[in-house]
Length: 140
Image (cartoon, rainbow, N blue to C red; front, top):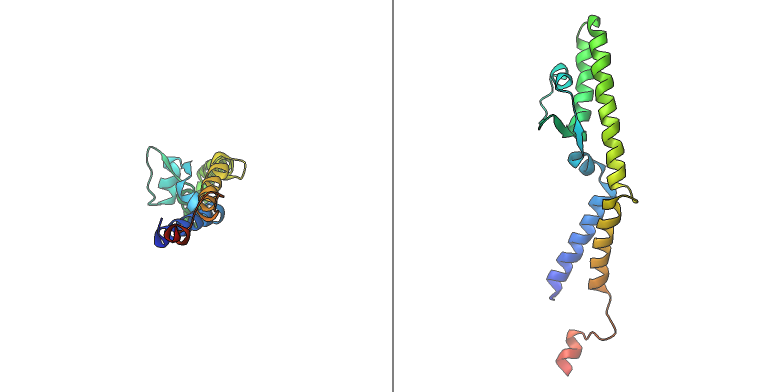
């Protein structure tokens, strides 16, 4: 394996580890979350909703826009607001629990991906006893 390919593989593995271990927004962008269609209408949020699911990132946007719309709307809509706000908070909490279960160090991705990246780095960087370097091959 040439040096450029090895460097590229190591860079991809390190980048993968950084994304997995340190990027909460990446996890929010791929974790599904249910948003009641009425909540999105109330918030007047333009978020992509696919078969009433969206992402935790978009659910948080809807949550913030609901606060804004409630501030603007009259106080007569308190019951509607409290209901939709409670439903949105409930679904965000359920999605965050799902996210913690999947991406936590004890979860499937938390165990699998660092192991794959770490194993790949180890396989590239550790020389086995029977392996010969390019210099050794050229001299023989």
